[in-house]
Length: 270
Image 1 (cartoon, rainbow, N blue to C red):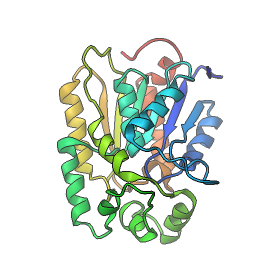
Image 2 (cartoon, rainbow, N blue to C red; image 1 turned 90 degrees about the vertical axis):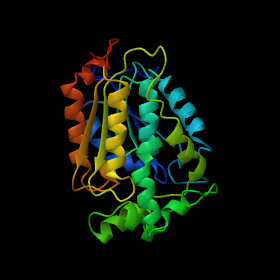
Image 3 (cartoon, rainbow, N blue to C red; image 1 turned 120 degrees about the vertical axis):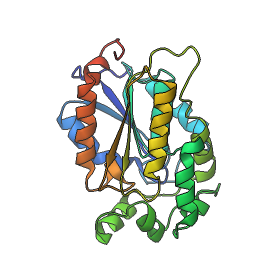
């Protein structure tokens, strides 16, 4: 078991599709300096050296995450981006996490309609790329038009070269949209959940995350489910040049719900 060094709790960070785990480097630096215990789930592309270890499906990714959590003590706070956000939500709903923060997650059901409509009418053809079941990656043009739309072209180019890599998108995205599981029969009290999105996200429509938030509130009115929009940020959100804005907001949110203290013990959120 990996135990905390500071009593502040454990965090597990999960990156999204087409991204390397190094996108969390800034978070790791800030959280380490603040005395938090943080682990990164590397589920897709490793460290960029050698052949990529690509998860074949969302189910496999979820199993990898649950195995990693089994080595952590106590239950972690899980923070995920994109597909990683859906994993964070599922871990929370299954009782494996003390709290979860889901950043620009892949939507499912009715909540996916605004995002699908945007992708079908967009000119980046990223929606078609998402249907591929072979190892593919967005071109820089697709990345710039859809994912990193805010900031300078040079910043986007640096991000693309450092953090973007090939993945097999179809099965991961298809099952992620279907297996969020907002309600579990006989499930114990669920910890707090924060859904966050960028107001200038050209990949995941803000309306999709608003609908997802409404669904959680309708099905689990007893649980804390909050929603935050960062008006000037794109899909990179916590990984781009404004990452500290999102990071510090998330830490304030966790503190407000007393989760950093709760996750370091055996209790549950009130």
